Amino acid sequence: MCQFEDFEVISRYTRQQAVEDGILVEILRWNGIPVMATSHIRDEFGLSELFGIWHEFRFWKENEEAKLPEEERLFHTEKNGKKVWVIEDGQAFTIMYPEDY
Image 1: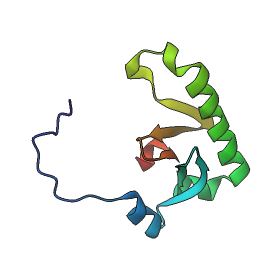
Image 2: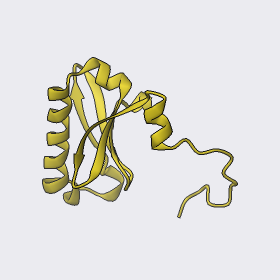
Image 3: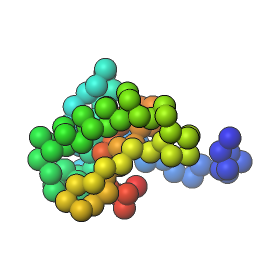
Image 4: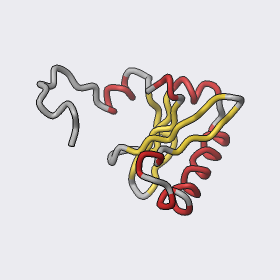
């Protein structure tokens, strides 16, 4: 249940619009699902570092996530002293800094 179910949606900002605006970039596809990164984090890391974050996430997803309580199932790692998230929304995975959320 979502706390905003009864609210009227005024506007939606789609992933495609974010790509067109340069906010998100696709870095790969995994099982047909796009793996995106915010342009902010992409500008700081090369593709090899983003792939490294993705591989950390995949390991966590396959080996650790199920062991955690539901409220703690948000992957995060640290790069260059900053927290990095990988968010999964059913349509894409997005690598981002928390402040980019």
